[in-house]
Image 1 (cartoon, one colour):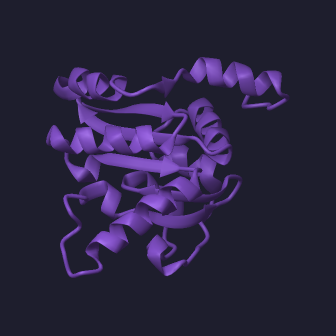
Image 2 (spheres, rainbow, N blue to C red):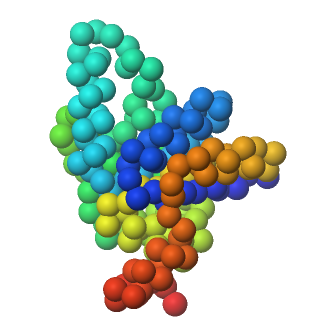
Length: 180
């Protein structure tokens, strides 16, 4: 059986490092997603990739999920940079262009929360993740078979992540009202 293992990160850099480790562990790129509301940090990464590839070189070891980052606008969140199967859920049938083109597109019908729910997250998590992304946090999610769950959790635990219940409590203390 396949399940979704996710981690919410304060910084894009920690999310990026976790994705790199997941790929090094031979987790298929098609099963890894990264979405960040920290557009500035992820754009800085993308500029470094483009500069390194400008001389005709390959992406210098940067490939997979990170090479597929795209800038988009998700209803209820705003601009995010995303890659992987969650990005596909966020954009639905709408075209997406890479961040190096500067293009921004709208997400498909149903909004970001509906898209996250359709991607397999429970509704309460979808609301929390959407709010966290709106506030500049980064989400890494992995679709994984039961036999690799422990390995994926161990990789994600190597990097400082945020406890969703603590984040929810902090947001609610500030007046955010998630789903009932």
